[in-house]
Length: 254
Image (cartoon, rainbow, N blue to C red; front, side, top):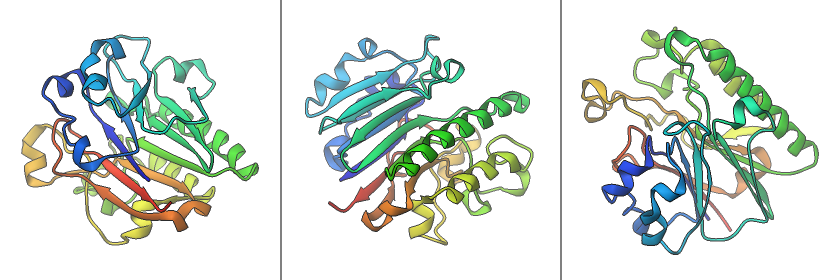
């Protein structure tokens, strides 16, 4: 099984430029999208051009902002949106899919915002999600969390760590929340498999950063430790364009 995540930073522009043609090559079984900034009726060609997928959307109440969607080949047992808290859920940040052997959370984590003003909101979001995941683990359920975490965990995960210690995305209190998830029975699948590998998933549009590979790893798969024996690989598709993020795939053994 291949699960792919991609922050599209506006799905309408990508659809209009045939930016999903790579699906025919990568062939994800489940595709989680973040920062869609649209409602499904605004991009009817996406599903028309890829009839092998069903889709589910959680658009933000505010037009042109945030939002998540999932495309999937095999219908899940259930689909749920949100974290059960209105202040998070009206921004369309979370879709949970239930399959027989795991729960998959597709999430667009909040950004800390200008002058780090939204960092408390972001940290509260992390805390609420961990509370729900702890409940899953307490019942013996396995969980995969994927999406744009808007945080780089370690210095290896961004080009200029020292210069960004006071910027959202690499603040100590943000990084600590990734550590907390790892202390609560989760594994960063990419870093577990590739201890010293330097690859990024986001590059600012400024300063020609992507061409120079001045980037950050912001897009993760956190996997319940009991699922790691099924993790075959994590692939970062840095050659797929269309957004300031690139897709990332988790490959699970059947």
